[in-house]
Length: 292
Picture 1 (spheres, rainbow, N blue to C red):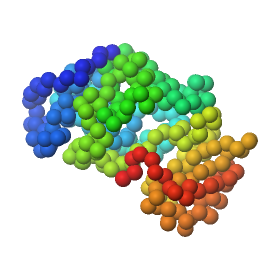
Picture 2: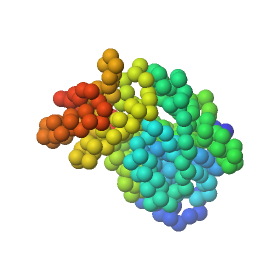
Picture 3: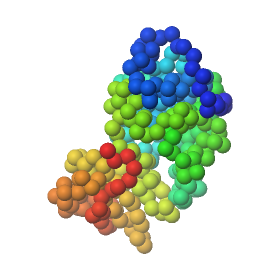
């Protein structure tokens, strides 16, 4: 796998659509956009880890727009990925005409992942990047890339360690693009994910130290799907274990708390029917990253 340096020496790419888009960008986005394009151009052919979130979607869209870049977006499908998110990612790729492929990952069978340590994401990314590495060798791709941005501190993100070990590049971070800039760039690209809230995998709902199982993930997914069917936009159903049974902590955004009060009894009954033994509600609301 080939790593690219942080410097970006731009070369002209003779494509009218591309050039018109570059000319439409404000100065604060034009340079980093061209930097990402150049990194992808120099890295081609490149496999791009694609989750359907705003970062990886923007990276995929830039690859699709940049002339001369051979790329393929890779979606990792596992029990920790909600079906709705998989379908949305596939639909988005179809809408922009991007090339993607779904591969199955099996991180949940790794005991080091399943025991749910604080660095769980390292084992997840390691599984993904190793599978991508195998695919790259079969399909003659030279580089792996993923959507880490300049706000993401490698020291705080275990997945970055896996990327470093397997020489997976992060063009958005290398170009100095921060989350707010990426959302703005996604708007210029007319991407429907521009305002999409951050949504980590389902395993992130499980308290560290509580084992990650397919059954727990399915219970979380079903519960969150029900809350979204009631119209809630920001949803987290935390999965915890008390002695020998699971209990839920339901979180919605602070702005949606008044609505939550209207549905408390209905949500509690439904989640109990699904298999939780207790259901609690966070009175302060979810205040994590990515709330818009």
